[in-house]
Image (cartoon, rainbow, N blue to C red; front, top):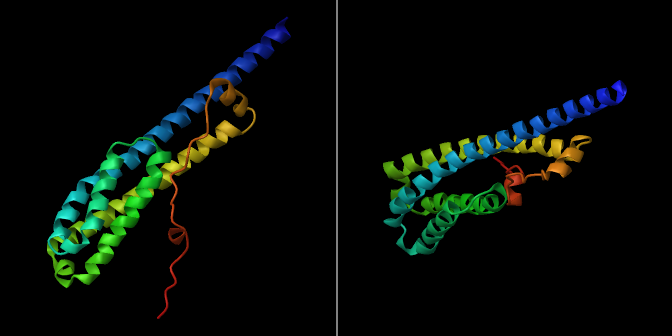
Length: 181
């Protein structure tokens, strides 16, 4: 009787320990996503300023500017890493196109406001990258807990599912640039 009771106590302690680990990892992933969201909000706030600055110089590039505005609007309505990640990658690609567009307009490249916005966007992109790495690390730990034995038994029992990583979409972003002098 005491042996059975001891086994039940051990099983209960293990269950509670694993459950608490899920709670901790789940909250860390939520906090990490919140960090990404804060940086994305900073970028969203800068986008209208960039579009307004570029508009005066590149009126015939209207489609690109409208696309950036449209993507920003869609993103403000989205939640979750999976759906938001793909659209975020598209927005990053489009913002790069705007900065590449500036190469065609020497006056725009020399505009102090544009240069400051470009610098701010660059800083925000660096912060997004750091937040993305932190988020992906917490998701990795959470997913290991969901998929590894014996915690996977509890994950299945409590309906914990693996979460999506916040990944880059474009293969060109995965490989190093080829620089030659």
